[in-house]
Image (tube, rainbow, N blue to C red; front, side, top):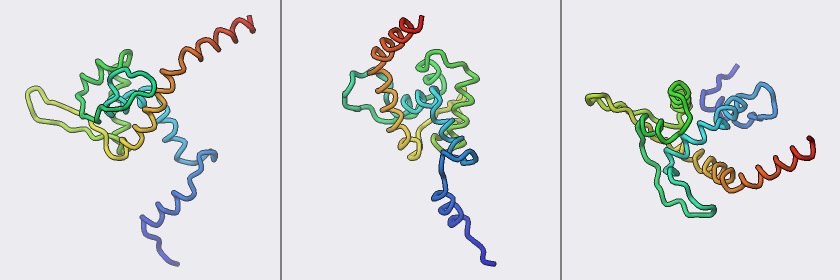
Length: 148
């Protein structure tokens, strides 16, 4: 019996990933990255902090942010949810957490290359939602008036 190196096993598994299958681990990843807080954290760390008109160029560069900055920027996120989401993104290798021994201790978060590649997709999702929200609201209103 031959042994397969870990890299070969990962390469083989990558070919076999299929999110339509119940047991595929990519479903867990899709569940994680489709969370609104994940999308907003990736956009924030990716430099998309300012509201921008549809079709505007993305001049802001990715940057490290402190926990308190993220907390202020993400209106409505609880401390528990922000902490859990940041930990899960770090666990998945999408961001790095850097602790600087100052008084008080400074903790900052920054996208990894993997996180930056996902940020490019979440930026589009966020922009789509902002651009088409009026249409969605109108459709909801029309639907509610037809079903009432």
